[in-house]
Image (cartoon, rainbow, N blue to C red; front, side, top):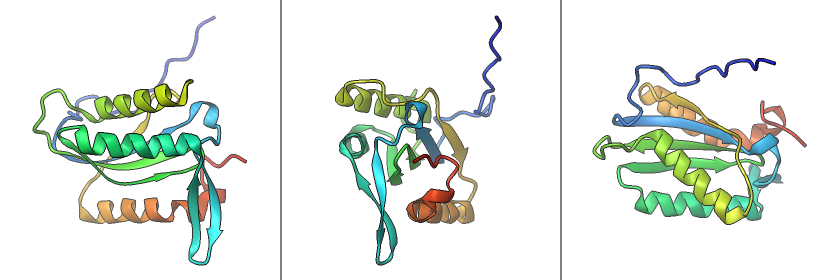
Length: 154
């Protein structure tokens, strides 16, 4: 049996360690809703972190303070996926978006005690201020649109 080839989701000639902003999304294994639940509020909706989600928030906080050359400026931990808006300074050789996500996934899976994440992640290179503002708004409003989200799973 031959398996289909996995389609690359990265730009082949782009240096992901280059200075810039990146919007990253990664999902739990089998898109299990382990990270949070979405709860209604007077203003709309918010995520309430479950134990695995609290580990993810801790991992983001730890790496944000220790991962030289990176800044995780905005994020949301949804029930089965995480959205991050990452700043890369480009000043640290060998430090790429992939290396940061690998560290975060490794830290959180070890703390959780089992495989937490599906392979790979989706990324988008932020292209200017309007794109940045749109992504920021998307992250803020993601809990409101949870039932319509492509990753929605009850």
